[in-house]
Structure formats: structure tokens, C-alpha cells
Length: 183
Image (cartoon, rainbow, N blue to C red):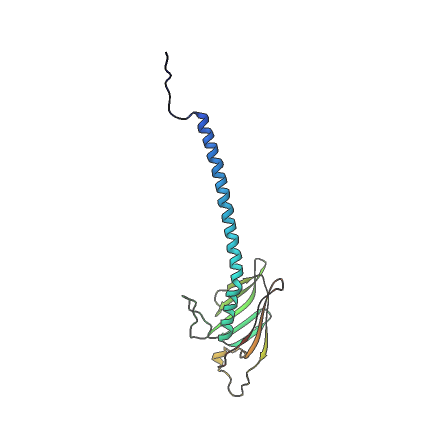
């Protein structure tokens, strides 16, 4: 009787089939990972878009309340007062400064941008439509006008005014009446 000797290992066909199954599984896993990554990025974009109005309104409100002088033109508004930010922590400093909010166009898109003391422009809102400021009340001041250093040569800020910011499609992003603190 002849005994057949058994060899341990895989045949060529088994190796090819296992390589094929492995590559199919890797393709499926990479597809799932890619899809998850795209969905995560979309959620982050949506989240940042939703949080932007809150951050924008908080920044604008703080600047309007701390301003002493304000000048509105067709492209935006210039504010002067205690508005400067420390370079390290963006905290409000105690020195006077000038902040300008203006319509800027970048790559064909309209955006609201902000600059401090004429330095680098910081984009705040993409798809910006319009900024309107409507004075509601002026402070009655006879001889009690603010010094030129406090207003930066700009007209004094009204006691109360309405700020409206619209998206490029006309949607109101922010509308609020600001009651400026009295000096």
C-alpha cells in the first residue's frame, strides 16, 4: 500500500482567492471611511455656518457698545473707541483703537470683513449682503462733547440705533437695537 504524503500549506488558487477577497474587503472599508469623512466635513461646515452668526453678532455688539465714534459709509462702518485687541488673546485692551467693518470681494464672493487699526482684514461672514445702521436717538450734549481723542475724529455714536445685517439673498442675519452706554 502506498501512502500519500500530505503537504501543509495553501494551493495557488486558495492564495489568489484570499487575495481577491482581501482586496474587496479593503475597497469596501475604504469606501465607508471615505463616506464617513465626507459626512463629517459637511457637518463641520454646517456647524461653523450656524455658529458664525452668533460669533459675528457677539463681536459686533461688543464693538458697538465700546465705541465712542462711528462713521457709516456705503461699504460698512468705522468705529473708534476702546476696541483694540491684544495680539495674544484678542482681549479688549484699554487703549483707544479703530475698527472697520466693510464689504470685501474675494474670488467673486461678497464677505463682511473686519480690520483693527488698519491691519490685516479678518473675514467674518461669507455671502454678506448689506449692513444698515439707523440712528434712533442722539444724546443731547451742549458743552459735554467727547474729546477728539475718544471719538478719533469721527462723529459721536448715537445713544440708540438699530443695526441690520443681511445675507446676500436678503435674509436678515442680525437685527438689534443697541442702547449705547452713556459716557
